[in-house]
Length: 290
Image (cartoon, rainbow, N blue to C red; front, top):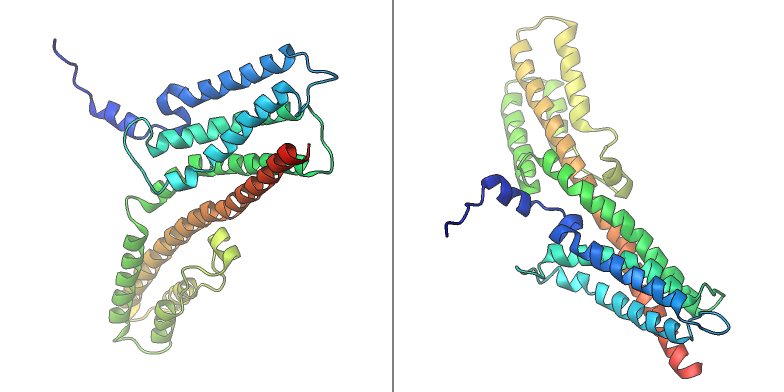
């Protein structure tokens, strides 16, 4: 029997499938089924005087929630062991998202809606904090990679830095026959331009007192004030400075996107470790002190 060839567009769609749609929403369906089973079990079991973490359904949901939390925490390890097949990284990430969201229902029903100033509520609060920070992560990882790709225009960060270095070499060459103050402006653009700075500068993507922008403004002002035999050379300089400004903007935007992803992890990962510590204390207190 003849097989139908797989078209290029189909292969590209499969390759670029979002982790949220992975496997035709396989893990969304699984998480929904687990959440529905938890809800049905919670309302069908007659726990006296009321459902709580110490009842049969409470212990059952608690064990499921604890195992899910520990399993989902392994994503950071899994990222360092990318593989093909059913358990490739995209599938693991999809499971991480949807099964993590199912914890909202499973863990909440485990508590029996009983909260207080204790380690049990602390573990629940940290779990919710991890989930909320994870929602921000979902937004970032859905939107930022595509924006980064569009901004790079098929260039890597190393390519952009290489192009900036090449423009600087050209600027130094065209500056040689010029006199002061033109040489000073150009040298300032070459040696004093900063691609990025501190955290706030990286997040904003803007650098105050940009030497390249100042040099370009000075050159443009010199060209516009009075006709000069140097105008043609200065136009070449201005063109290079404009190219550098565009490339700097792209490089700074790329760094801004990377910083957003890294900054999110600085919140999400420590919260996860705090959750694991509180979860351990919760489990120990339940089995040894109750």
